Length: 568
Image 1 (cartoon, rainbow, N blue to C red):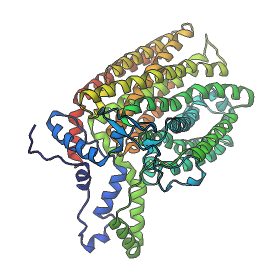
Image 2: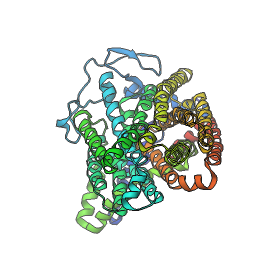
Image 3: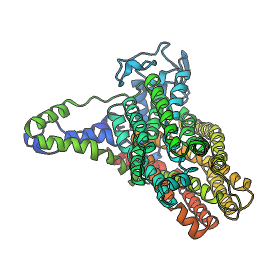
Image 4: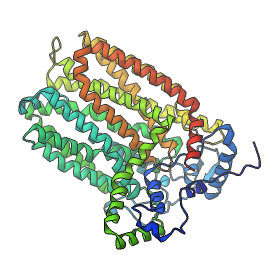
């Protein structure tokens, strides 16, 4: 290791994105000045982790770790409770933590309504408070998932009500999923710019209102429009929630936290079909939309009164403030063009992460699994309402239970397993965080189980075998897919410590696009290929993606080192 090589600090790397303040006055005529573009990129684009952990740059890492240690970096030093001393879980040192966490001046939207006070360091919240906040995040994440699943048992009832066919009604499910994927790009940008709390409160207020439109829809077109709006409104939950977890949990605790968080989005399809089946049989499909209104209002109240702001806001540079002021005074049209770029176009900058192989391959596997999940959910009514099963709507709803039970048991295993792996890696690498360590034997086991569950469900349901056999396949798929989802999510959060919400929003964008497409094509593919051959093809694709994860684990540190150099 060359002793003469000077380490580059994170501050130096970030400063490379800035420009000289001595710019010409003519630059004010541009729609975006370089200083403003740099500021927008700092919000919209995740900063790549500066811990690439390859042998060529270990000296850089050592320099960073020394600087971080001297600065009292919270993520390396603070644990998850308020005890006076504890091990930091990464470098094995005993640290002293304040017995009374320091409060900060509240910055959250409607902060006076929240019973939990804001802290300078969200890592210092007690274990009980963190568990409550985790529950609020997970419950909020369950609401949009329920919004898609409530339609499964009631598609025939909706088709009869509007004198339409199943293909058109399934279009509402697909459009809902597409909006769930696209809109998080803006929600995550708002969360990084204005805060987590205000983003949640706005989105769930809109979700409540748009569900009134769904419940009162008088035509298929009106239903489709409001389904798109409800999906977009509720889509903040997963990207913002997963990013907020990174605000309060250190890396060695995030695996378990993300596993519990994912129970919300994945258990929505467990509870919603059961409730929807019973509600549809008793009061019709519109009652399911009123049910969503009740659930979303409960989530809104839990956020309003029980979720403090955890974001550490970056102050807007003075030169950006002055540049905006001069532009507004000089040319109002260009000023509004700048605002349009900042709030409408710039969130798409986060999609540039997909050019990096490590993120592309990891997100692709998670997205494919999510697409299989929605294809399976869409297939269940088609396969089990026909002879010889002839199940009623409420029984169809109950068929989703094994999948959900698989999610619950998977969460108990995957988070602990992932955290165990990362703690072992930290010890082996002198406290350096290697996100790729999570992509180990646990992912191989999960990939094999997912493939086995897919092929078991496809052939047994397609050949009309006794109903319990395909449900075993759904349980296996649910158990293993949660391991894949949570491991991938934690990998992304660990790799993007400074822009977690934006990183997760890209993951949500891709997987919901895939899920929406899967909802569109489920019926025609089953009719054309049969369930057995369709799920055989999906099994083969799943195994290909599994091999790619092994490649990510091998090449990931090198790829992250390259990303670090590209960003500064």
